[in-house]
Length: 508
Ligand code: GLU
Image (tube, rainbow, N blue to C red):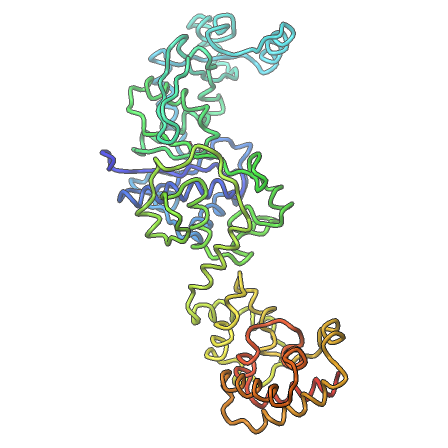
């Protein structure tokens, strides 16, 4: 059990919709917080106004809501009146950048992008890489080399500047990560990163570290792409004389083929969503028909598992089992087929009433009044439930129920031609007429009884099952698909069964 109260944050930049990888980061933060009775915080890192995308913050919030991983603090859930949007916290960062400047941990640099470009090119010509750090900071246009008066004069004249971190020259840094263990880094390899710009906005690094400190974040759980920033962040904590949080960098989510990071293009190519909710012209998991708890289960196990073969875990189980120490170092291959498998599994465990409720709007949009038989019966929840119980084994999504079971509502209008050619023999009409008169005499229209009666009749008449069953299915369903035929007959009832057999005899 961690000593400090657990407070974790999900800190997306609103530069677009939340991607599957970002969503998994949010999930791991949520699971960790809830396991330890801690707080899960949403912080919007929107200081880079050039990359800001309208609607992205709202999207992120809706996505977390849909996934049922609510944040405890964040936009709209403020404590102490402090904003959780970095763009609204700029005065805070100004105080802290001043502190670094005053303590000599940072300096002001006036180099224009043109002059930096020239330096870069000159270095390249010599086969070297230009790094703005101890190598050459003493030769560049910054407050380390200019007089105090000159710096003040330029600031008064609003000459554009940035504030850079003064990276120590040769310090052995020992970095700890819960997932990756201990890493050693030589600080002389680091550049003097920009922390603040003259537009009054901090860069990611400063705002991130200041906020993690002020928000009393105990554990920073974030994507592996931020691992290269860890050394700078640790140095910033040192510069402020703050205790750093515990860090855990999550593995990448890889393409289905296994190599490279999963991208939006992979989704388009493979026909699977990479966003939880629809965004512009990309469909989301929600719209595709995924259950949020199935997606939560799948994504939770993408890079972590509790060490057993079990695959189905509800949210409470995930919370109680989750351990950062068991998160894998290696990238996790995304498997779109597995997401479907999960949805299928979760669908099997939904109650008939839940499935009916979810299916009703689809049914209502698909059903054609002119074709529906016995509407007073087929529109009743009880009837719908019965059909869904028969179909669900074959369904991955609720929307599958319609193509899988249209015949429970509509009398077939046409018949699978290929199947008719193969299965409808010269004697089929006569045979079905004969069988139909047996059905007319039946009182007990239960599936068991129908099955027994049909089997006995086939034996008595010395027919083969192949002569009888496929044409009978064609007459009832219009195709050779569907659940157990006698179940279907029993559900649609005696009158409709007899009518369908007569119709098929007339038409075929
Ligand atoms: N704003 C960063 C992002 O978009 C957050 C990184 C972090 O969690 O420190 O991923």
